[in-house]
Length: 172
Image (cartoon, rainbow, N blue to C red; front, side):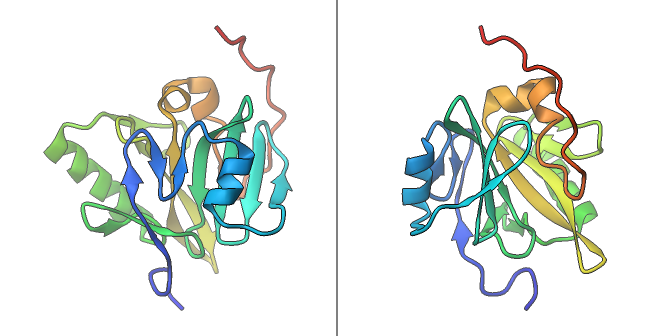
């Protein structure tokens, strides 16, 4: 099966979430929205993280949903201007974001690892290696995380070991 066949399609809700998931949800709300019967897999890292069997990994800040990462192959598909954000060629996906930004006046941001984000939509495009091929992996992020260098640079990096995170900045 290719990265585009047989996948659930989710709608992008700019700045609010994706599919049935909304930033600010509790872990129980996320599990209910994803209709999971059993507990998700707890993932190590600098945030509260849960990985679900359907290619969805969620990240919490102070107990509420702050970030949603979709697997390039098994995660739900999200379209931006008709372009599949997950499972595409990373260069084509970045070009899609650049074209979208030029057409709609969206704010662009490059991260230190070379990933590209449309900050006003809360979309960060990472890549993921699948069977020796790199594919685009969309990550949806609440605005204050995407604007914060601390959070943004610690969002899911495919294949990178979880680094020892420095102490979190104090909350205002």
